[in-house]
Each structure stands twice: as structure tokens, then as C-alpha cells.
Image (cartoon, rainbow, N blue to C red; front, side, top):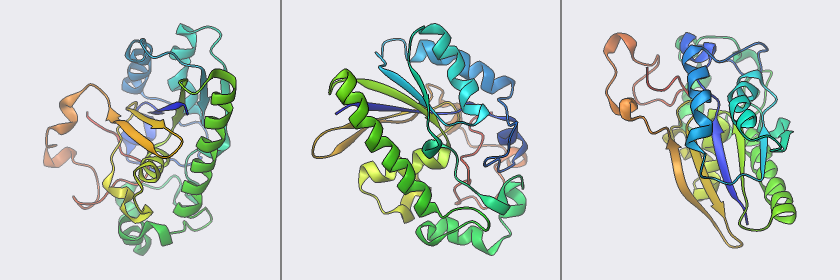
Length: 233
């Protein structure tokens, strides 16, 4: 079966603003995110890609634009099932504010039971994303062969949930996974099991440097940033 190349969108204005964007329209890449997207074609230069699939949201389409320009003729498909989690009433609010909500702890510790008010559950988000990948695996294999690779540009929580599925992890453990903006995660699917062959690869080790207290991500130190966070400065 094919190899799935998951790319999280580049850093967005919502990431740097500490805002949970969700499906809020008009969220674009910031200057650093635009540079990350511009570097993507070189990072994937040696990978033969059969197709590209994107979330319909602007920040994902902007991230793939340089790759598509570098590879004329690469088929592009839009699939709402790999769109961001529907955070409902949480959308547009700051992470710092959301950490005070009772639901925050549930999202961190028992996400399989969490449902966002006016939005969807984390379980439903994972189910639609997994269904999308299974469908695209079959389609890409049928059209391009079992050794084909294809890229999906999507969002942090979507990627984390797909990685959890590939590793056989319970959804309650998916907050232990971190993927930075414009990172590359690769899952090779086979008939019997998937293999995680890359996780959150940016080629930039600055993200391992402990942040200064004043610039640390909002929220308790041990929490996963809902939506994915802004990555290295």
C-alpha cells in the first residue's frame, strides 16, 4: 500500500497569536510560515509524489502552493475530512483563555470522551481522518501502484490522531505526540500494519531548546497545545 506523507501547514498568524483557529476563515501563513512553505519543495525533492491532498483551509492551501508550482501536473485534491477539528465555540479564542475551561483537562487527559461545544468530538475527528486516509490509500494504490507516495497537507490534531491510529495507541494518548508547523510525518501502510517512518521532521533542532519563560507556550507545562502550537521561534 502507499506511503502517506503528512505535512502540517506552515506557521500561521493564529499560531503566533496563541489563538485556536479551527475553521475560522482568513487564517493565513505568517512570514515565517511562508518561508517554511517555500522550503518544502527542496525537502521533498527526492520523494516521487503521485498526488497531493489538502484540507480546504487557507493555511494548508498556501503551504502546498510552492510544492505545486515546483511540480507542474501534480494532481491536487481537496478533502474536508482532513480539515481541522471543528472546535465550535472554542474557535477564535486564545489558548491561554481556554486552559481555564473545565473541558481543557478532559481534552488533555481523556480526549476520547471530549466533545467541543458547538463542534465535534475528538473521536469523530479521528474517525473521519482515518477514513479519509484509508480511502486515499486505496485510490492511490489503484491508480499508481502499491509503492506510490502521496502528500496530505493538514493540521496538528489531525496528524496526531493519525499517528496514534498507525501506532495502535488509544486516542487518550494522542496528546503525547507533537508535530510542529510544516513538519513532515510519514506513514508507510502495508496489508497487515502501518509503519511510522518519520514523525514531525522539520530538519530544525531549535525546537529542542527549552523556551525562555516569557516566550513559553501558554498553558501548563505538561499539556499538549490544542491545535498544535507554533513550533520553534
